Image (cartoon, rainbow, N blue to C red):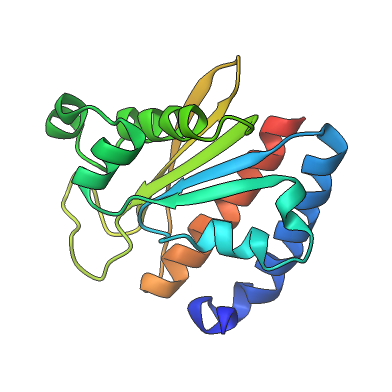
Amino acid sequence: MLSSLLTSELSGELIQQSARLLEALRRAQAKLVTAESCTGGLVAALLTHHAGSSDVTEGGLVTYSNSMKQSVLGVRADTLRQFGAVSAETVREMADGALSIAKEATHSVSVSGIAGPGGGSADKPVGLVWFGSAVRGGDVRAEARIFKGDRTEVRSQAALYALALVAQRLD
């Protein structure tokens, strides 16, 4: 069940936010593709939870490993080597790569972070998540947030932020 993947505090909000985003995509006559790492497809799952979402959801790509980021999304090996998977540069390339794959999508969102409990460092602590967003024919942006909590809480908060980020890009 989807709710077991989400924090109980955010599950209702996530379902509501994903429904609102689908309506906003419809109003804008836009289509979305996701490229996810630490969220493992959670953003796409939230969107496709709703019946009829296929009219505005092009699909979702889970590229958890660096090799998948490279082979599926076209993230450059040099980018990963120089900046790491959890970086502005990587999520920009992920968002751009997702749009190049999903020919009908007008928008993309990408997520890469450190959900924990391990894997963090002084420079990249547990809870650090980078988000990329792209608009076909427009710019590609990246921004980071640091979320608190356990792995489920970090992933839930990241998914909620990704949904909100796409909504902002529609305005």
